[in-house]
Length: 409
Image (cartoon, rainbow, N blue to C red; front, side):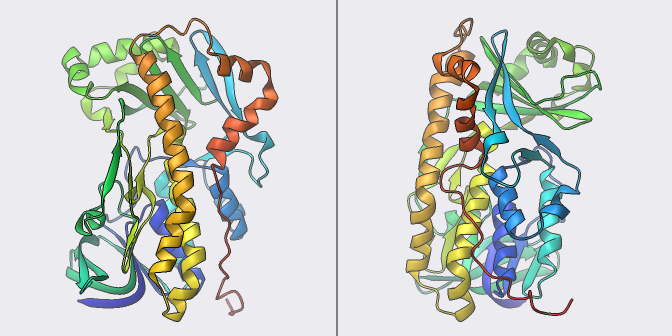
């Protein structure tokens, strides 16, 4: 089975779906391939940043988005040692939404898919796993995908790899990956939340431990940070030891850690930070985690992926619609998005190496570090961490038209 289109996007995550919807809205015929039958995967990132909310607002869809169940985070903070501190305050951001929205990623992706289907040029193929590239000489000419109905060949002027940090397509294209050393991994888990629990997002930084709890109304989504490669040792000590550690960090969890009945309730996220030296090849572009895997610090990976998608749509919509795509267009996207990627990865590496790794090694936090004391004592400074997390460097704005706005219905 062969399908021809202007743009084929492999991967129905935030980057792939946002790019697909934006291009289709601009009148470009797009096929998005998603290997699963639905978007229901647990422990995906659930953060929708103010910059992404701004994009949704520019599209005119913000009211619809905010009607869907979500939580709003207006400050980020937690306990450093025994002292409660606020690190970032979103209330001063120059955006429509001065908060970070927590929404299950499957709901966010369903939201994008619903709006994408309003455009006749948007085609979402579920249960279609991209397994190889189609080539014409030195140029990528499309994707081979595996589906329940048999093999699908999608031929396209442009193939976009948005298939995640373990991208098959970037591997098939032999694009060089620069791996940056990471000293941590993360264990994800859910714990019930009681009405008497604290209402805000909580982070705990204490000697030997870093633990983050995201308020999801009826449960806490928890991230327990461990040293790289320490998962097997932790499992050898037993689940009971993990439960005791969690209660030692956050005593109010004592009546529910028993919900962690077995290790299936604890998911290991192997943390990676990497990026491609070159994000493109003739007929191929990588965006999101396929171009640059981020640490979970700040939850900024989704934000970077969405910003890549907006920048790519802004640059590519016209040449794709006109059949005039050039390698110069692909190179321009990397040039625009590489600096935000490099700066963010550098900041994440500094935090991991100089703060988290030392804390996990048992370094004392009895005295607040100077930057944290400054944020505690001077609330106006909290806008800077909030801006770094909420907007990032070089936030993108929608520059593409709605090609169907004047049509009836």
